[in-house]
Amino acid sequence: MDCLFCRIIAGEIPSTKVYEDDKILAFRDIAPKAPVHILVIPKQHIGGADEVNAENCAVISHIFTKIAEIAKSEGLKDGYRVVSNVGQHGCQSVRHLHFHILGGKQLSEDMV
Ligand code: AMP
Image (cartoon, rainbow, N blue to C red; front, side, top):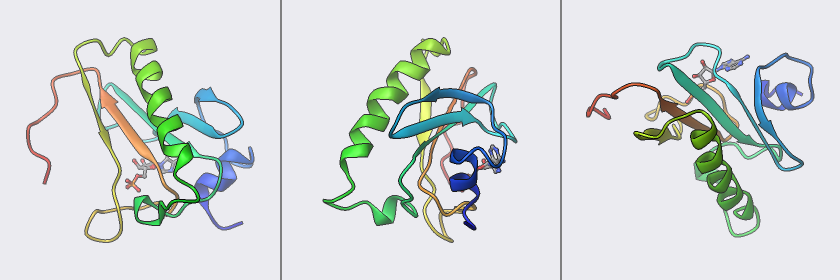
């Protein structure tokens, strides 16, 4: 298994878990870019947002349902950002679909 996030799911690499169920895992980013920086990933290996399709898309709505709950439990009442980087131009560094939850401070308007 050469996917870092698959190894985190398998428990081979430690993570600070925020939420877990049979379909998804949420854990704290090892290099936080904001006071709250959480990654939410499907347990099924999907390479990125560019590999979401009709067969595997059910987990996406589940992820967003849980993102709302996680943000609430983290106290992000004034808002937050959800980001998924894709491929080289998107600066995706881990090729396993993940959504960053960033918050806990006023974020920049700049996206690029
Ligand atoms: P991206 O650059 O969008 O692919 O995001 C990958 C994220 O994974 C980065 O924000 C990294 O800091 C984070 N990351 C890499 N390794 C780990 C790890 N072992 N535990 C938690 N987060 C990690």
